[in-house]
Each structure stands twice: as C-alpha cells, then as structure tokens.
Image (cartoon, rainbow, N blue to C red; front, side, top):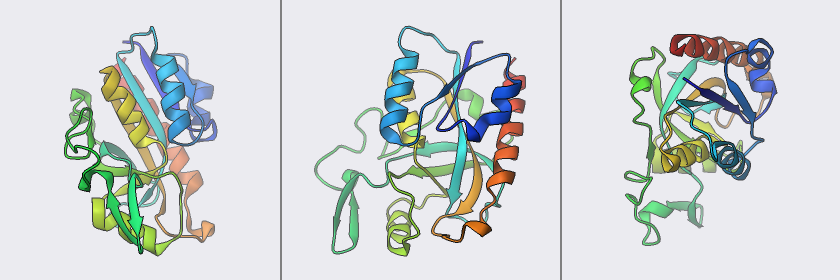
Length: 208
C-alpha cells in the first residue's frame, strides 16, 4: 500500500523523516490554507492507499495527558461563523450553510476509514482554529459550541480534502499543552513529539 504522511512542520516529524524509507512525506506549512493547497496538489494524479496527518495538538480535556497520542475521529472548523458581543455562532447553526452538506455530517468532518477502529489509540473529537490563543473567552466559546477534546490548526482542512477526494485517512495527534495555557514552561513539546514519532512508526509498520 502506498502511504503519504503529512505534517505542518518538519520539526513535528523530524525523527520519522530521518528514519523513513517506506512512505511519501509532505510538509504542508502551518494552517488551513497551506494544508488544503499542498495536500490537494500532492494528491492530484496519485492514488494513495492511506494518508496520515501527524502533529501536535492542544487539549481541552484534562482526561488527556500531556504527551498522550490520540486519533481524531471527527473534526471541524471551530472559528467559521459569526461573533457578536462575545457570543459565537457556528456557520452550521445559522442559515448560511447546511450542516449535512457534503463532506459535512451534522457540521462535522467524520472519519469512517476502517483502519481507525483497528488502532489502539484513544479516539477524540477535535476542532481546528486559525489562531491559537490564551483567551478564556475563545476557549469557552469553542467548548460551548463543539464540546471538543483537542484543538489544532490543520486537522479539519486535512479531513475536508481527504473526504472530498475519497482517500482513506487518519489524523494522529500528540498532546503538547492544554488549550488556554500561556505559560510555555508547562507545555510538553519535546515529549509529545517523541511520542508522536514513535506512534507514527508503529502505525506505518502495522500497515506494511
């Protein structure tokens, strides 16, 4: 099976890149626009049996430990909508967009790739934002609207393209911090990246 691994930055999968001899790798750049453009461009004219997005994430849930590796079962664009007087309304809770318009299902980009149920990693609900913030207002808005467990800057873009292109995919994330924590000394960036790369290698080996 031909596999493509993508990440926003080289840093997140550096050790995997150094050891990899089996799969294609794409570093998209950070954020939604770069992910959509670079992944769409990479997929054009190619047939991958699996595309894996690997990266770090922030956690809303304290049940997730820093450094823990998870699989994102569903994702969405958490800042796509309207904000008035510090109240955020998702685009799917307005009259502007049907929450079940393909590839969305009740406003979510749901991964139904069979492989996801065979892996032993915890399955979480994630959201994607265009800005990482220590704002407690933004944090609560996201919790109130989506009740997610994790947050990234690329996940929903990855799900969106993969579903549109009908390519099997999984999103693998390692928890580096809790959302809203501005004190970087409390983040576990190094540990989360080490664990992410180990989990990524295990997944690739299990698919070989």
